[in-house]
Length: 332
Image 1: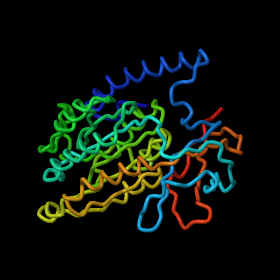
Image 2 (image 1 turned 120 degrees about the vertical axis):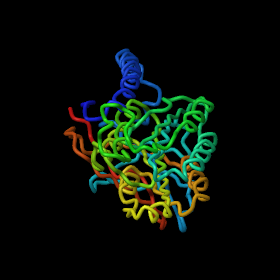
Image 3 (image 1 turned 90 degrees about the vertical axis):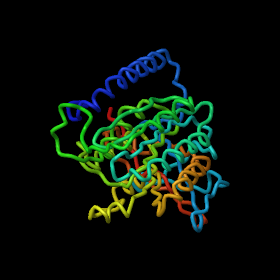
């Protein structure tokens, strides 16, 4: 990746980040070279075994958590696949990222978002899970790298501040046009530089009004980064309607984050009032405790790097299965 694509505020953050990733990747390579599979390797998507997490919903969004392997029908590019691996309510380690929008449009919402984020982390994280905290406005900043320490995560969430100036904190970018919400850049960096090297369940939770302004990466590139890292994206969309009206600004909706969530098997929750933010986090928590793990060996043995489209249905029930729409096969 060309780091010069991003302002130096992001590059400085990545310099520390990448050094840690390089060390982790080196250690993992040593394990693999010695014939010892890394922890959690059984749930990593590869060209040999493809794994995915699925949420099944009944009427009115009721979560269905008592299905068996034979209830699922899975196809890849239209061809039915044999499900070789199956489990309910998986205990696979969770790598979780909280990405908080700190652009000026979120000023009156931030305190509630911070309190709900901390409560969510305390209810979701277990001993083997880890999380990181990132915020984004005209800059993208990693406030806390992966950790299980609740006090560090809570402190990182509390230190997120609204960028009132609309300018980058980096001197060289001070003359750039004001304003910015680098949502796509944040998803790209979180997926490609933080999540890609992880194993187990990988989930990003975006807390934003869904607007992107000024990203170097476009929507499709951010979606592809999340797909290639096998990341599930959840989006809590909350906007300050009074502020938009006061400033005579048009709100363009949440179609971008809906695409991110839909393609990766996550969900977008549109919050109508600030009081509903906590409830939105609770819904995500319930889903993370109701996932199915499905794994199969693709009948298509070609390794050409193409995108393989996946569809999951439930036999004999009018249930909806939600999972990622596909994966990128690895090249030989």
